[in-house]
Length: 237
Image (cartoon, rainbow, N blue to C red; front, top):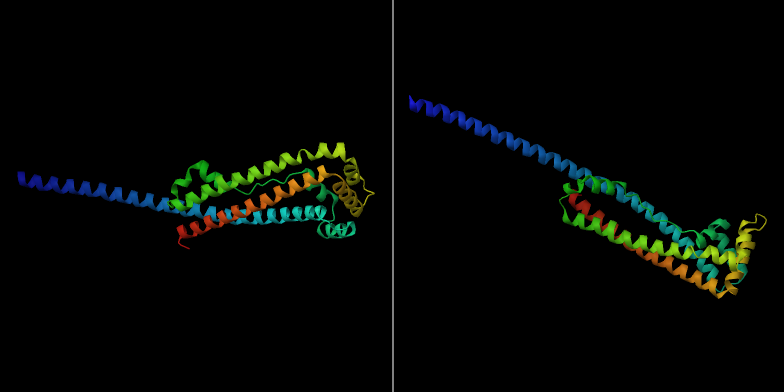
């Protein structure tokens, strides 16, 4: 009789243990499967944002290079007719030329997905340490360098308006006068730069800042490509 009960309860105990084990295994499998889906979702989101950032950087680089080429023309030893011709080939707007001197161009790439992943804690689903390292290098180190370069340029340009209004009101007046053509404006600005060493030196420093920004942007893009490479590896592409 005792043997019969022992067998009965042993079987029930084993069934309970098996049920708990299977339930625990199924739960772990479901959780692991869900984590894998989240991991892929995060990586694909970052991958998509990389393409958006790359396009933004391409546009910024093109704009900054045009700015620098215009500065190079004004700082060159070309004759005034050549300057007028070369600047006119690059831009047809007096606003564009003034913008180079007094307005700074922000660097604000699309980072909504990255910030969302960080703030939500979804980065925990990413297993690759290399992806995490490259994310940090891109969005913290390289991005910080670029923001600092933009801030330095901003500080320099903030000195241009009071300097121009005090020392070269003819530049401001020529820009705002609709009766003064682009070529006449180029002539006024070029003559002012050639006559005033302080204005020329400010333009030279501004040109250096632009060159520095472009070099930092190139490094930023390289880090972007490194991140893309590691994400592709993590996705098995």
